[in-house]
Each structure stands twice: as structure tokens, then as C-alpha cells.
Image (tube, rainbow, N blue to C red; front, side):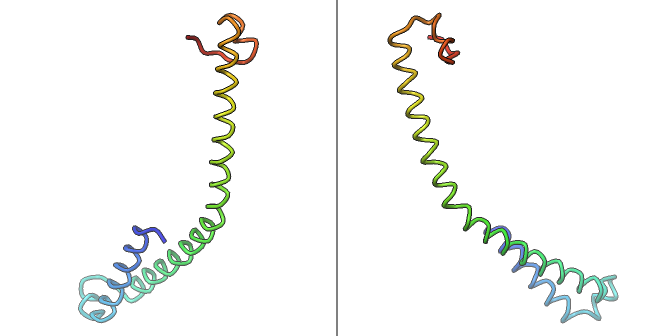
Length: 103
């Protein structure tokens, strides 16, 4: 769970509990039981969606690690081959091999 979401859930739970304890007093100031119930429902929804996100993150983390490894391999190979190409051919020929940059 992200720290920001966790903090918001805890703060919101505390507020809902406080509002419920003082519902009569808060009713005089325009806060109704329906509004408190709606807020409590929104907090529960946030918890559910956040749990979903955490689950997806757990599944995604190993895939992202694989992506980084593959990307590093491709970058290394690209750099090595480009270096070889630039060492053996004049700049005018680089475009023939898909290397658009210049010295």
C-alpha cells in the first residue's frame, strides 16, 4: 500500500469515527448520517481498489525486472555494434545501417 493512500485511509477512518461519536452536534452544523455513511463507503472503496493495485504491483514487479534486464542487453549490444560500425565506415555510410547520429 502506498504511504499516501495508507495515511489518507487512516485519517478518514478517524474522522468517520469522530463524526459518528458526535453526530448530533455535527447534525446541527449540516453533517448528516447519510453523508457520514457515504464517506465511510468511499473509504471502503478506496481500501478495495488499493488492495487491487497492490496485487497488480506484486505481479508486475518481476516483469519489470525482466524488462530492465532485456533493455540493458539491447542497449549494450546497440552501443557495441554502433561503435564497431563507426570505427570501420565513414560517416556518410552510417545511415545505410540505421545510425542517424553524427560525430
